[in-house]
Length: 297
Length: 297
Image (cartoon, rainbow over all chains, first blue to last red; front, side, top):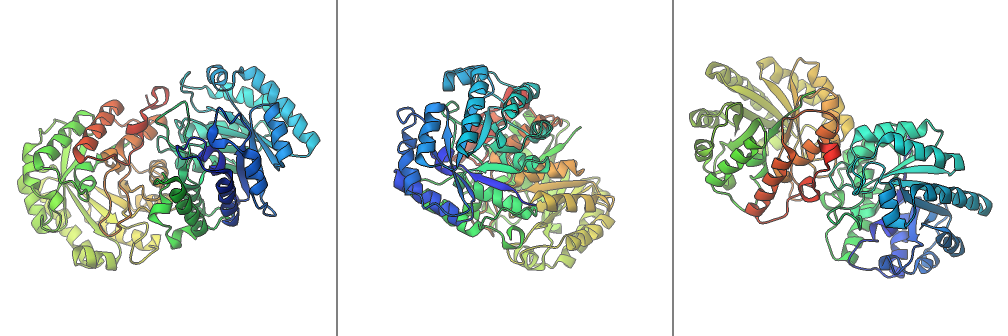
């Protein structure tokens, strides 16, 4: 069985790093990831560069990337202005993300959840007109740093509203890394029951990320976000660590008999390259320990 | 449902640390762990201190520990001489471990697998006579650094021979951290089918440790080894990282609705205390990120 990995390292992975990488280096990262077999790459964030200086030069990243045939390049957008920039920059795919709690939504995007759902509808409609794929991510779906526990019923209610707009997929995100597989199974199954194609986005902050990823695919999620080397974090949770590491995820999935299309050794080399660029050891485990051929294939 | 955690931090956790802790400090670690609710503690290793200087003074550790009522204190032994030392030191429980591949067994203990199975029989018989609990651990059951992939049939064959001797439990150990949940499910179910009470011992070297732990309990394993802070490693695999962190495991298990008897906040404090003693940040994630009350309970 096939699981599609969406590589978010160039965006979610780098947006909280102390070391700012130039657009040309981020484009090279995209190229190396594509060469390792990652077929979907979140290449840039079309947000205000004053708010997130790490993501400045999104257009330059897209322009410098060697668009590999068969690979799709996505841009994160948080509003219609960002959408327009992403389209002008030539992305293949739009990623729109919003938090499912009002407290986080107001702090993060100065909008309520209801505003965000309405915006999701407008963005999906525009993407349809423009012939672009679009995914909608529900952030803090497993817990919120301000509101604490998030009830699954509430997430599913929002997912239902989003699904009515008809995005290509809905991504359930554990933005602060508090979720456990029990929640994953419930939310993935509930969202699938709405007729959605479901993906998940996990952070490994409390070491549950890989267990959650497995629970997700075994519950029918077809898509998993991950970042090479396990880079990333959350600006609102200072001690939060990164996304699940793509190479750790690939090691697990291949060991479980899933196909990903990714060359693990090439991906490990990519993590080593990125660690040098960032001047620090990254949280991923497999790039340090090495694969184990008889299991990882 | 209840899952029993065997805290192996004072033994497996510390045996590869660069910083050697005095027996009195190791005894204090045991006391802190017991106070946090860990009811089974692997307190010491009765091996040759010339081979493992970190474990010197096993008798002193046992003597200095405040034996908390209801808590059992175990010692690792690798031969009958060690068994006799452990009994004389007053352990409640014997842990005997041997590798399931001849290459590792010969390098590690200068014995074949057949020799080790025979020794297991003698140790179980002696423990029965002495009225002590005894568990037998099958090391490198998920992969061997020298022989590579280990066939489950081979592990189950050895498990059957061990089970015939009648230990209290059989622990399946992923010594070098290469296993994935598919293997865990197969081996746990196969070993249970032999009539054994089954436990598992995971290292998080490739980030699969927590996913493996969940697979183990969901397949009917009742016992999980873990080390506070995720300390530990393998002398034969220099880049291997530690055992799964006890506090990370407790976070997962509580979130999944299992009972452990452990106070997560007290355990986090214990990990912080140990990190100070060892003078380094430990691999555990939850002690750095903090719990998340609505999930972790």
